[in-house]
Image (tube, rainbow, N blue to C red; front, side, top):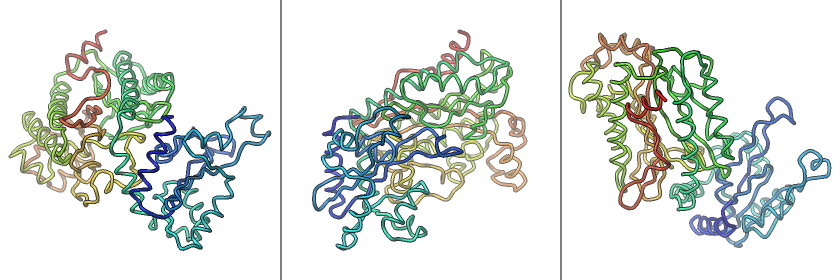
Amino acid sequence: MFSAGTYADRRASLAATVGSGVLVFLGNGESPMNYTDNTYPFRQDSTWLYYFGIDHAGLAALVDIDERRAVVFGNDLTLDDIVWTGPQPTVAELAARAGVTESAPAAALADALERARSGGRTIHYLPPYRDEHRLTLSRLLGMPVSRIDASFSLAFVRAVVNMRNHKTDEEVAEIERAVDTSVDMHVAAMQMVRPGLRESDVAARVTEIALASGGGLSFPVIATIHGETLHNHYHGHTLASGNLFLLDCGAETAMHYAGDLSSAFPVSTTFDGRQKDVYQVVLEAHLAAVAAVKPGRPFREIHLLACRTIAEGMKGLGLMAGDPDEAVAAGAHAMFFQCGLGHMMGLDVHDMENLGEVWVGYDGLPKSTQFGLKSLRLARPLEPGFVLTVEPGVYFIPELIRRWKAEGRFTGFIRYDKLEAFADFGGARIEENLVVTPDGHRILGKPRPRTVEEIEAVRRG
């Protein structure tokens, strides 16, 4: 945890922004996997961590803005519990670590909210992403479950987004620790891959490094020779010479701040000619996008810059034709780059995605409906303190090639006669994590191999 003062200051700033009423915070509980006592690994809610920092299950809290007080609710362990868990801090002791002087049993939360409701006071809560939270809110607020998702407090959401989007120096330092471990994960994978290994061998190795760092994974590992599937979590293939391996993985620190890196490298010791050509296009798009990151620059413009660079590269390889700017405006580049360039990152690898991309990444402005562009998670002008990823890629998706060719789409821009030879290529992407500074940006973490020459040097050992 950070200091108790950090959490107290955050809650005070939040209360001042929202203005009045009662703020409800629901921490996460244990989630059974296949029976009650066999649970998934516990992960605390990130907004709870931001304002309270208490990484224990089964807690909730209220911040009463008008009365200027906060209360943490939860039940102390019984002796039967302690037999299995060992001694644990009391709820009062946990609350004190977050700078909260009041605590109460879990059942008292219902009474506190009933008093607030009876007094006609506004009760603010965030959009729930777990069904048990929907049920809890329905019970506490006397509201049908069907209304819970639509009745969250937008003022609460926007206040949280504005605070969590701007990372403090101590947060950036914590994120950088996660990125450093993530670099170690990627370098280890580059060193170990060889024909005959399974994707699961690589996934196991990078997971080991994340766990040994004292934290864990920031998201499920993507380790695949089928990089054309953007979020491919299957690890059952055997590596062979000529494959291009895509690794997208990151570490999470013990405080749950995330790193998120992507790499593409050959299973052979060197890139073949086709792999090198495509990888170089991705690298050029990546370098152009990174260089453009600065305060005031809309990230949507940086995304489109990467798209144009990819379109120009594909034209250079004979896979596209026509004017690259016109191709991007029409959406033809999405044959190769179907997703967004990047996203906010912090306590969540896709920071605050549960609060809504339209608020986190668009500041309330509408998203595009164009294929490819609609997947852009971040579009707003950048501000100092934003931590984000830059992740261009080129993906050859056989089903997309077949469908667009059959529909006659973008025939003035896409060279289908040449493209079909790449249907077995897979995909490549490069991802790094940046913090926006007052005069530009800084790439977080220690250096890692990203040029063809650097990667091949690692591959050769």
